[in-house]
Image 1 (cartoon, rainbow over the protein chains, first blue to last red):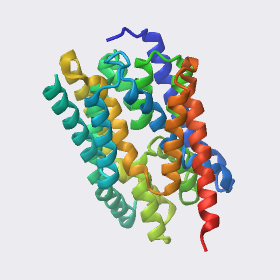
Image 2 (image 1 turned 30 degrees about the vertical axis):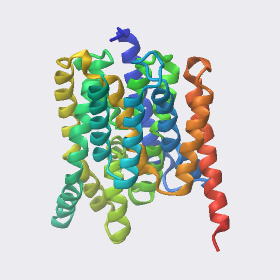
Image 3 (image 1 turned 90 degrees about the vertical axis):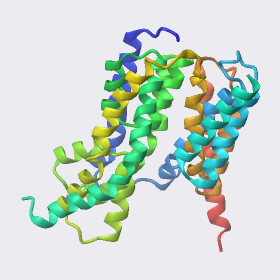
Image 4 (image 1 turned 180 degrees about the vertical axis):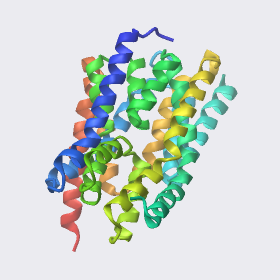
Length: 110
Length: 236
């Protein structure tokens, strides 16, 4: 576990708290009933679906715990989590199958 | 002011929001566990859940914190993950925009996937609802998950300090995120956005300050928006 500077953590918490509230309040509080440009809404629709995979992809291919060596349990767990999520549309089912794959394979191959 | 029908809308919201406790409880606990693993103490962990109140953005910030990303990048990336709440806010505005400012400020803080999903369905189905009835319904949907989110974060944080290092929790967070991705793939444009973001993220992994993430995210958003336009034009 790396020791993180408490000041940094508080800055992140405060920044995210203010930023998240601003994101939520902008439209309902400030913009009111004025319509938003369609091009903006069209891009906003794809933010989470772009950022989350981009955040995780390098961690799957080059895991920190193995010093960046791709390893089978982690790749398999990632694949299972995505596929189960796609099929069942159920986040919790995907988490549990992914975790079961990871720990199962770590145990078998470890 | 709270007449009988308004009150009954509170309980309608309460009932519609109740099933989401099965999401809030495990995710709150997971966040608590991961946050302590990332080096946050219990007070910081609870402050995080209570003030930010946005699961995916909180998880994203933790992951980047562990990657030793610069503070500015952590803030920008986590807020980018949370941009969808701005969309929810925009979409709720025609229904709730006429409420008093203090109510709108409280509602803004409580805009999450669950309250939005319940409310927008109900408001569209019952166009005759008054603004106070809509507001009451909205608050009803989050009455259970908000306190539970904070309570389970606390329990997770307490539990997290007891978990041994050998549990390979390094990969629990990636699995949690990947599990969220599957259900998000509602259209082909969503798939295109995700694939482009993944490819660009892998290509830009050497870019300093984790800036590759923001580049990949922007590329994915543009790709998704363009794919949506193309698919719409193809429709008869």
